[in-house]
Image (cartoon, rainbow, N blue to C red; front, side):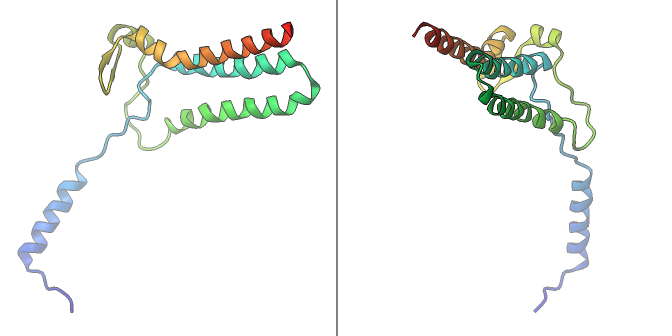
Length: 141
């Protein structure tokens, strides 16, 4: 019913387990981008919500705008907290100077800092421009 192991097999298993304990997994939870880039993204998304909230200026919009602001803050705040939990490791977000000098390594190769900034901020900027266009069209019609 039960398999019997020899002393040699048990000793080999003990060596494998002991060797495996010596290798710890290093996890980088910093997302490899400078904090300024995340702050700019949050500011642009909040700018979108506040542009529409203030632009339409209806008191009934206060609660939906407040909920949207909380969602944006939670969407970026929870991952920001997540980067600080877990095992203590030496991984820190890239400094702006290092990011500007070295760029960032992606799956398809190294990308210059200006290209990475454009890739990260293009959607939030377009969303803010879209909100501005909605307000301009609403004002003209």
